[in-house]
Amino acid sequence: MKVGWVPGERTDAAASFERGQMEIDQVGAPSGARHEVAPTARARVAVLLAAGRSERLERITGGGSKALNRLAGISLVERAIRSLLGSGIEEVLVVVGYHAGPVAAVVGDIAPGRVRTVLAEDWERGNGASLAAAALHVEDEGLFVVMMADHVFGDGGLWGLLQSDEPAVLVDPDPSAEVRGEGTRVRIEEGDAVAFGKALDEPAVDCGVFVLSAEIFECQRLAALEGDATLAGAVTLFAEQRPLRARVVPRGTWWHDIDTPENLVQARRLLRWSLPKDGDGPVSRFLNRPLSTRFSLWISPARLSPDLLSWIAFLFGIVAAASLAAGLGITGGILAQVTSVLDGMDGEAARLQMRARPQGALLDGVLDRVTDAAILGGLGLWTLHTMPAASASVLLVTLAAVFGSVMSMASKDRIIAHGLPAADERTLSWLLGGRDGRMLLVAILSIPLDRRPAACGAGCGCRDVVPDAGPSGRVRVPPAPLSHSSVAFTLDVYDVEALYFRGTVYVDLAETLQALGRGNGTREAAKQRSSCSNARGAS
Image (cartoon, rainbow, N blue to C red; front, side, top):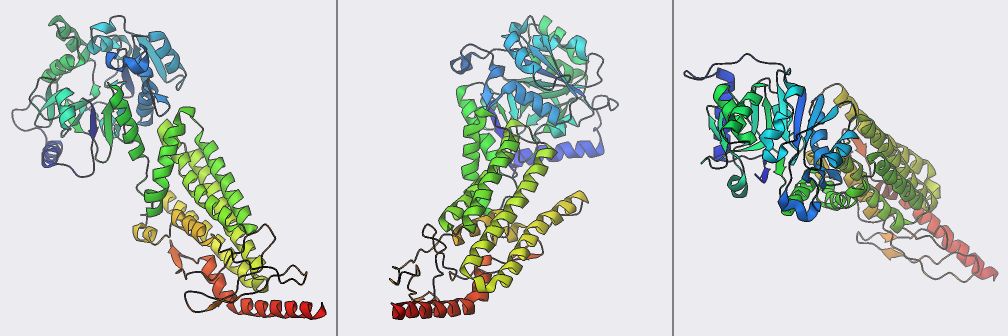
């Protein structure tokens, strides 16, 4: 089995399989079925098989263990362990064999106290023999999980199976032709897996993870006596004695079996595709994420802390705010958009490294709110320099924008905390009402139109005012420059409609301040022309 991608839409075969399984789950076993077994407590321990060697990956491993191959900066064995622990497993027992020392050394640094290793001395006989090495450690468990270390799963891929209170196997009922050709096929009868093997003429394949009981060790011993030391042989005998429920890979997630260098490349691609979130707005989905996900994968071998990336994005935002406050529209606008791209990388790093923590989400949220306030304050200061006569209006609108930005996220957090249904924000996001859209508007509307004519020649440092008719027919008067190194910014650009964000009116500063200051701008221009004339007369 190579790779399985399970999108939201299923084929007819997969849908029929799921409907049949649901009917059995709801109604009970049909007449003539094998005996029912009383439910058992859910598995708390997992056995992770990491003892084998892959000759097809030797070009990458250099003869080392396949379990130590890195995917997005994390070894396969660590990724498997973190997947199990993150899905509710309390303890992981890692079976090592080939290059046992290096694998055990890596495993020992992962969640001390919750991860142990055991040596399979006859690992070369097959993965069934590797499983037998764990018998003494899990024989008292009612149920336990068995998983292959070279199988990778997307977020939520294991959750449904690991909640099972009966023996079960995770299956892909509709794999690709490549997966079906090389995978371990599964025969499904009335919702139960009854046989496993590569030679079976069945469409479904197993995904390399099982919920089993201690009877599997006797089945493994009997299968080995018959000359089959594989896990598939042991599980087939187990399924003949006790029902083994077939659980389908959840919709929208993916799984991958890594046996070749090409599998690693494909796994990286699947990881990148899984990084965007369902709630992303159009700017994030089509502009930010294509950049941030590639960059996140590129720096993943460095294993930078997600919290560090949150602080880096914050620093870029503060520099963007300072640039806007100084009237450097091009610099501030570009940095504002860079901040928006970087803001997604902390979460991507957390998912790639499987290090997502509530504390990290809290830090990211607080820094985002401070960044928003700083950028809005920078826009307000910039406008004050160009429209000093409208200082009260500028202050009022700036405070309203900061309040709306903070309250929009605060209200969302309270909705989540109280378990209330979240509002559908898809329409709003297409109106650029999300944070990604607002940051893009800041970037676009901060790009200056540098209209700086020659100085008037009076020695006063002022510049001639040249009326300029804009697209709307109104006369635009460029504001005086802040300094010789600053860039003048024309406020009268294309009108931008007010954006409503989670019930809070978020008014773009450029349009609002333009409307408030048109009269003031005209009066200031008249005063400037009068001052220039007086200076010329005096000279």
